[in-house]
Image (tube, rainbow, N blue to C red; front, side, top):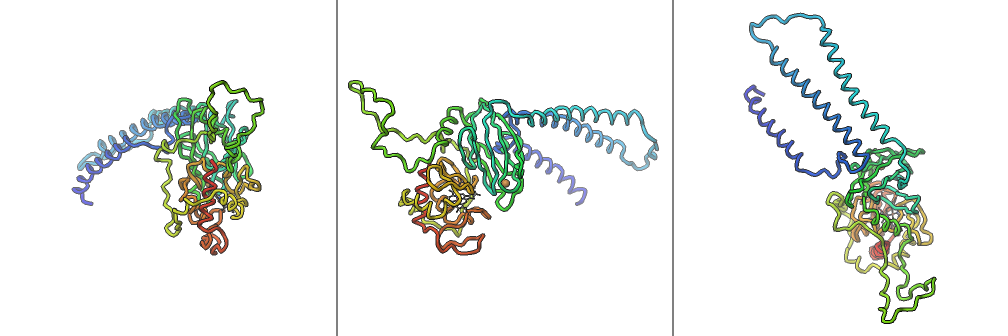
Length: 417
Ligand code: HEC
Ligand SMILES: [Cu+2]
């Protein structure tokens, strides 16, 4: 590049850098870890600010000294020969002492933050067991008797204490908006805790697996709902119950255990009880950054009109004859106790399926059941649609469920609120 062109390029480059810096101002960063939504992130953010402060001072000082020296002492035509010197004790002591002081200013808060974030969880924390699987997350609330998958609810203002384990290979648990990441290690429990700020509004955050764990590592996501304590209590109370299908006959209310109080004169007949399915984060309030946008495979077709004809009772049977009970538990469905795949007891109360890869709706559920391995590469769930090609086993599924039977199973799953 000629000298002239370089002179022209420099201002253009400056403008480009300036514009790039400008774009950083207006945008939201839904997956950034630099915020103060929890005690953990507050410590990390405070440390980061301090590092950035000292780092900026050092950078500006060193670069300024460099540029001044380059310009002031550059070689000039006919200039004198450079003076030859040997050492300068004062200068050397200074440039050793200043960095040493800066290192101490960085090291002390760093070590303090490490101890803070590695300390045992405070008393009264909500215990959550996190179990990594290739490629989905199992969540247990041991004190509440809840098992769920991929979607985690936590109340704001209460510390959540995680015990991290893995069923197979190494994974790593990271919800950037809430705190640091921590590995899930084979044959060992790791621990981590954080407290979502009490003044957080009910919100949804993305989480990820951040330790490469095989084919669908990138498809192993978490949805975290931080909700108000009463919303959490409602969610938890319902999740701990068995599946709601088949529902109790609404026509014959159960005989009350205590003698019925005689109805007051003129009392209205009691309205039919509304089935309580507990709190679920409202679909209308979901922020765009948590809505899956993965396209379904082009070769995987399903006539969505069939879904309207789905019969949940036939679907419950289909769930058994289709082999689903070999891998999935549904609390309340006899025989469905396997823990190989995600617990489906309250599958309809989740917004996504397949560890955040697809929205949890009829068309996606149907395609998933038909050929899950085409939707999410490498997974343990086999291809179940009749006549479908299983990309992992490299065989065509000759038995399996036809499209109508799949519609029935979908109708059944959608009853499991
Ligand atoms: C060989 C074991 C196996 C069988 C059989 C099986 N599944 Fe699965 N299923 C899995 C695994 C493993 C996953 C998790 C896949 C992932 O997200 O990586 C899964 C995921 C799912 C999900 C998504 C759950 C969630 O919360 O993300 C649904 C729904 C589902 N299976 C339904 C079914 C149905 C219906 C059948 C029977 C027609 C069935 N499965 C048969 C292993 C199995
Ligand atoms: Cu993983």
